[in-house]
Amino acid sequence: SSPAPSPNSGERTPPFWLGYATSAPQIEGANATDGKGPSIWDVFATIPGKIKDGSTGALADDFYHRYTSDIQLMQSLGVKRFRMSIAWTRIYPQGDGSVNQKGLDFYAGLINNLLAAGIEPHVTLYHWDLPQALQERFGGWNSSQVVEPFRQYAKTVFSAFGNRIKHWTTMNEPQTFCFVGYSAGSHAPGIRDQRQAYNCVHNVLKAHAAVVQEFRTIVPGGKISINLNSDWGEPYSASSPADKAAAQRMVEFWLGTFADPIYLGDWPASVKARIPYIPTITPELAKALNGSCDYFALNHYTSWLVMDKLGGETMQGRGDYTQGQYYADGSPLGNPAQSDWLKDTPWGFRKILNWVKYRYQPKELIVTENGFSVKGEASKALADVLDDTERVAFYRGYVNAAIDAVEQDQVPMTGYFAWSLLTNWEWAVGYTEQFGVVNVDFKTEQRALKASARYLASRFAGAGSNTTIGRYD
Ligand code: GBH
Image (cartoon, rainbow, N blue to C red; front, side):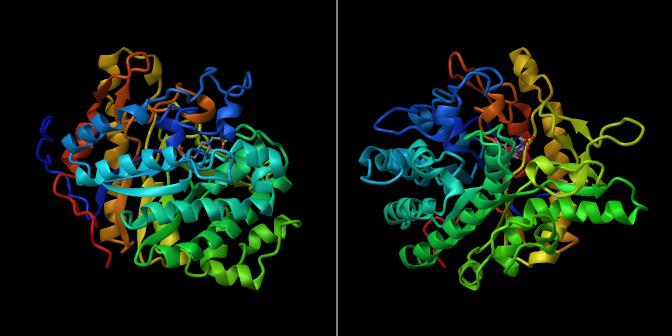
């Protein structure tokens, strides 16, 4: 089928496979179709001033109605894996209660079509779209009452699809949805209370542990994890021990807050020392978390220069340090993206992969998101959008860095999901920041390949292209 990827043009073939990552609220649209209930993001997006361009995800990529042709598009690119999330509100419109069969039918259709096309789905249960009813009833992730409905929802989904899906994650980026949603307040549900963010962290761990316990009996032989995100922290002054310690603290606050309890049994000491009210991890919870990740699922995008103190990131409870992305002479850490938090810093990717390897020693690691938003892309003419040289450069550098991490540093990375397949609804910044390797015209819903889609197809042609479809070993 066309377009045929051109043969790999002399670059190293990665020792890991390529897939594309997506999430339900960012691509599906149809946000009140076939009995779907409202999520906190559906509601948040209707509040004036919350979304930069005033948009909602009501239509987005209309993937709900167009997945058959999008799967054909992926086939033409040689894609072997697809990371998708399930919308909790399609299955339980009010969060719990009775199942909405039409929601299950939609995902059965999508999953079966992917499998028939030879594309293995990796499924995330929760990508930020909490049922609004649960936010209203008990405050969402601020309350441990969230655990039961999440367990129920997960059981229903495992029972429906566990025989067809091998790779699962419970939640995407709790660091983001707890701190940006409940402390910074710029994401749904828009709460500004650092204590609620740490309650969220604690309830995330409880819910993850509870769901994994169900998983072990319903999906024996399956693999489950939790998508944890972290940027890399580089000391602002390499010769300053204080800056070095601050950079280490940054990664401990971002990643260790979740990964330490799971892999090491307790919060990082640096976090405990600075957050006096952090909830206690009981021995029972530590025991349930132990072994709850069959692989490490890492989302990574960028790096920061980190300085000791000077005000600190107190708003998000991330500890007493300051982070920036410009050197003393004013030059940026790497090519700046449209997203103000994102610079093209491939060296940091290799460093965080090593940090994870040394601290947690996972048996297997899958990068579950990595991508770039080109500056000004949303307002460029189509021909210029498709010629996304800067995104190609980003992927070239990050893929090379990951190959070094695997081949020179023995990081056990087996797979790499690029974020994302389609340009999509980018949460609080709406359609103003675009990450897709396939452009979507939001008036016509027409798809068009960017250079980066062709680049990745060619770069990964023949690379670890196997799937585990039908193999539960
Ligand atoms: C991921 O978040 C998400 O999983 C995905 O849905 C998203 O589309 C993709 O990346 C691209 O953004 O911290 O207050 O400045 C990446 C981590 C966390 C980075 C939130 C941007 C913005 C809010 N993101 N952050 S703030």
